[in-house]
Image (cartoon, rainbow, N blue to C red; front, side, top):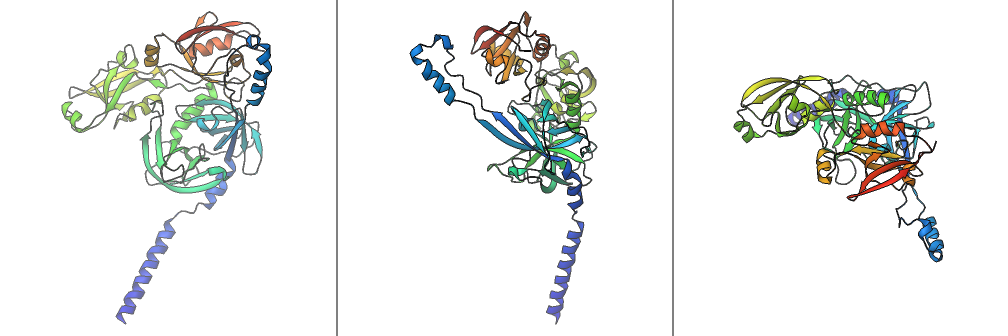
Length: 460
């Protein structure tokens, strides 16, 4: 009898615990119904670029071989490449946010809603460093998602993602926030996004889709996964809403994003370094080098300093500093708190402009400019290794463009346009905007260490 009572009591207790646990789980059905209409699937088409081939002008090919070369060119016709991702509407007049890598290099972008309406989208602007792109479609009265207030998200909070993983339209997945402020450098070593880490199931096709809190507000934009198999293993990363709002504002206004620049080389402070620097614990960003005439140099920052607070934000490790500096507007004066020779010191630094912003869009679906190029500035290290004072490197050449007809290729470094020397992207943009149409213009560039001069003609 006692055993039966104990067993019955245990069963009731387990059932009570189970029911209590289930009662605390959120119901996501209303959230999904309310937010799904503003989530979109993005399909892109990229024309495969033709190979450079022999680069022999047709007039120099012997008549006996000319037909053979022409037949070969016909056989090498480009085949389109298709890809997909997700995005969401941020204003009812047709602005849509997605990832940079979803639309990068796309010749055609088609946006599809859950009610099966489709629109052709144009790129307003995109930013590689934050992996964000702003699109525009010709539509009004669209359902809109709102961004959550910054700094409200906590580790352990429930979050929900909606997107098109593996092409499965408008799939929802849930999880919790695993960490905040994750530093994940890009393939170029840049680190300007304090990612949100979650265990939400994110897979290829979710990129660019929204990450919601329980109020239906967007707390992040799904961007990356860590996986050895290509599928979700519970490590996904989203761009915080606080980063996205600033990027969207600049892309809408200018088509490009300007970031703050300090001009230092940094590293983490470990236990041994903390002892040698008379710090009570490992903390902050250790300054290993200061670039001459940089904002840091002008503001009095020196090698050996350890920055522990910048613009009122605590710097726990070195990865926090680029996150803070990059989000500041050039020209802003920021207070700095640092340790120097074991003593706390306060400085003020005027933020500079980080070079290497991407070319703004000028009427082409692939984001290229008037002459058909996407370009980036070169770092100081790259300039020194090449032995040149300035220039911009070509990242992409559009088919059937003035640049393509002039024989420009990805990797070429433009040094001069017309009579104007090109030192960085800002100078390049200014010169390109003022180039005349139907007029041969000199273009001088480096290719594999050799200077080449040609002419380029922009069609009206």
